[in-house]
Image (cartoon, chains in turn brown, purple):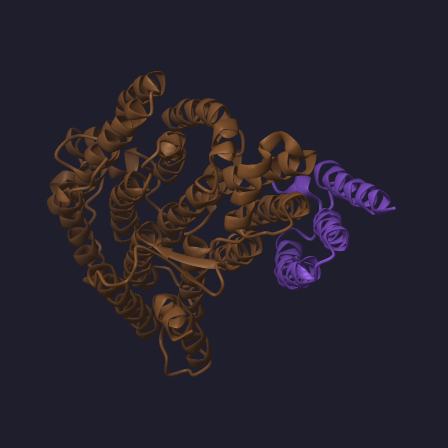
Length: 472
Length: 98
């Protein structure tokens, strides 16, 4: 039991910290700046605890907790690290963002911590109802964060869309788990795996239907085709730091649980790999099409998030190989998180009051006025486009390699083609920043040194992650 | 006999889907989602009876708790929408065109 609690320590720290912050928010003395530092501190402590678990090798690589409901594997720990780092950078970039935009209260930071605890639980969950509860802890907090700007009609509309579709997907997930429970007699992944191993996938119609419903819910949350339509709107309506948080932390959690669900049994994979193949190809190309047409930077980044989901689905297709450890997925998620968080952190202090700077044209000539920020943004964009020596390149390299190892050469080629197409919209911003005359001076005083500092730390992360060796 | 409960649960679930897709009122949409969750609960309880275990009952309770939290949030959003537009018709909200 003690051991179980130790495995959950980062989750407990974040959860308890969130509750403490929520209680402390009732005091007037807790300004939202202090709350930002508080939540960043909570994330930092939890990150260090998680990191010490990762380094201390004595913990078994795959240990069950709470009677097999939760599992702490190397994969879940890596995903947890990414999520906690996302939370840390989001807190600090929100602090800079809310110096210029006055709709913050200190509860905002407690909600980020709640969302993070949901995400952490999601990476470890090995039981369908725990997955559902974790999904809802995360989603409920994120819904509120999306609609945090209550005076803004657009953000209200975004929260309406997200809540309606998210709850719809949640209902699909519960129905799916009910059917799977009906077929397998248990909602634990291990038991479902045993059932599938003895009876096969097509033995009972309840299993087929249930697995299909669960898959639909996951694909919706992961923003894959054909459930991608909400992403662009919701990301556009949310404020910049929240969008960054959703694009990175939430996606990490969803893909972690998606991979955990798929590895439970070979029979399940065999049936789904063909579908995932088409879904990942369509996700990549539809995402590219949407991204190319966008004028707004935030909408472009949202659409590029769809494309990156497509790459991650390629990695999931490669789940079928024998020695799947999830390291490729975790690496790509880390690389993507560093780039995306970096760009959103930069936007949160460059965006201007009320996010006045939105389109590509608004950032014309940024390189003359703010050379360091423009250089940082360029690094992030190049990483997302997959240019060496950035982390994004290595992530794509590992994904394509694993796809080839799994025998999916067509998929690998299509992934490369999509990555070339995506240059179009990433380079467009770099061209706007470097090769156009400035229309404005970008000279508002820097109100907080934290967001620029975070941006430069993330630049370092982009290069450092690319050096981290993993075995494919 | 068990089959009847399952059919009922599937019918309720389909009614919920129809409600979400066809209705334009935000309230009705959220009510339909609750209907879908309750259909899942019914399926859980029925399957618990089939397997003669208590797991399904516990799971149904969990789903109910989460559904209540979601309903609370949905109502808050409804109030927010009403403040902005004075209407609860989903067609009114069309600023974002993805």
